Image 1 (cartoon, rainbow, N blue to C red):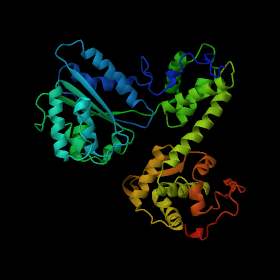
Image 2: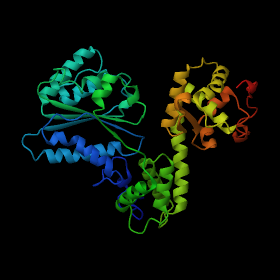
Image 3: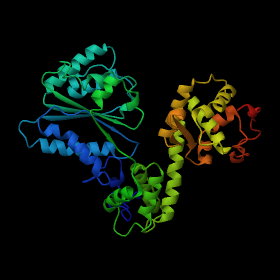
Image 4: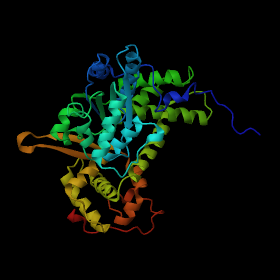
Length: 419
């Protein structure tokens, strides 16, 4: 009995919609690619590579542009006998210290039989090993640190760009490429690190609907059979993507989800309805995953903002969220965080796309500040944080959204006039 048979009616190559797919050409990023290419030109000239810092929101093409250009750079460099180019690509997700990054770099330069332990060495000793291994490799070496904003200390971000100037390297010419999703990360760097790491800065703005449409058309031509996509599918996916912070990855995921729904239902075409249903399914999953990854105080901050937003108070400054958050923390028997740490949680919510942020500048008298508002469906948010609601209590503003059958005799809050 055959349970699985190939189904190729919808997809020609579904892998063209996956994150690791590298298209033959990048669309929608002509200006950024031109600037990036110029910043990499010293490598082909046999000169000391530039240190390059890329920043912009998730899904705007920073990593894709890096992989695309570096692949071409390696191919083109191979034509010159006097250029020996190596590229080390390291994603810093899960790495929080310069020590961890330095040990990873050492091991990436060594054979499997000569790896070092990721603990137990003084940082200075790891750096000595790194300089020795880099010089042993020689030539031009580009070190790419993706999601560099995960690193809590900036030692490695100072040491690598200045290794040759400080006399740590004699042979190797090292260039550092840092990629960050956090706009404020570069502002928090020390002046000495900023001057080295940000030698060449390239900002990747959010994609607009036209950019996203071109990207989706390029992927769709490879992924789907001719005639499968209804005319409204790609424009709708692009419109949703432009609304969702200009994230190309989300738009491509949405197109794939719509395709999967059509394939599961054994329909001949992908329609607007598949896109709309796919978006609801992806949004539920994304919100749940993002909220589940928050700390307990992250949940309390989100619950405070949610209730204030439902009362029509948003957009709000962090100082306006704090009284409600403090009250919720007390009801949960937790000590409230200091204002700065509370703001960090608001920034994390914004990075996850759950909260929108607006920068305000009122000049010399008012200064610069941020305002926050919810950017997601209330019911979806509540469904992912019901444990927090049960611990703190059901606020009046969320009561209409809470399923009474699932929450018999829910706890209530008192004295909300205080917050």
